[in-house]
Image (cartoon, rainbow, N blue to C red):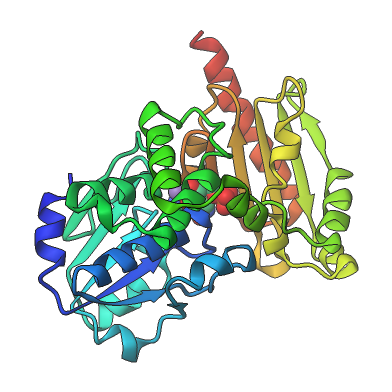
Length: 328
Ligand code: 5GP
Ligand code: MN
């Protein structure tokens, strides 16, 4: 799978790696693990993210620095790799870098329907996560290069992208990869879990309690919507980044087939996280709302205001539900 990639990428002196905007555990874990792999194999690396590393992933950022992209730094790179997204726009300033000083672009990702905009694309939508693919890269090359830092980074990405190995994207290969990372990394699962999932501050829980109060059910309780407003953030001294994982609460309601968390950004519109625990394909839904992602987890955007967003989102969801029920 990585034969051509390995041959070409190890020829460059300096490679720039981009993870996607509003980064998550999978893209940061994959970015740091790939950066370490390139370094171990004699390539200089610069790792970029326009939005920076979220606090709950700071420990991964300590294994390899991820910095805001800077054209002067990026211009030093002979090639770029983008991770965990399949269209240039997902990588923010990657697009302007490619405009100003074009370089071969390599893409490694696990989302469906990749865009044909890269020199080389390595996509496997059956993989649980981009970190699972980077684990495969290490195994194709030299699995003994997986050290404790690499293992923790990849383990984190696999866990965060699979709801701690609960989603239907989890295959026997995913679980084998996790076992291999635990064996080689020499760490205990709770070390990572405590950093990533048990690191909330009381303000976040206050925000969660306000958000839970907004849950509304539509279409005979099959669609659940929850939202967060700027006023709620102000009241609890939190930011939209503090809503990580909130969407799982409305999704956990019995009978709900899809849940949407709406983050009201005021004049910038409404950013959404869509999740499905049914045959309902939220990627199709999100694609009608300026977004995309996976069948069971996607992101989207609507110009707002919030009440219009709820109306439009439920309308699109209702059509999807009807089509789904008719096809049965
Ligand atoms: P989240 O809801 O956690 O932000 O994102 C869930 C999934 O949807 C992730 O796989 C993420 O990469 C994808 N995603 C989130 N926002 C967008 C977006 O604006 N466009 C596309 N194409 N995918 C997105
Ligand atoms: Mn991912």
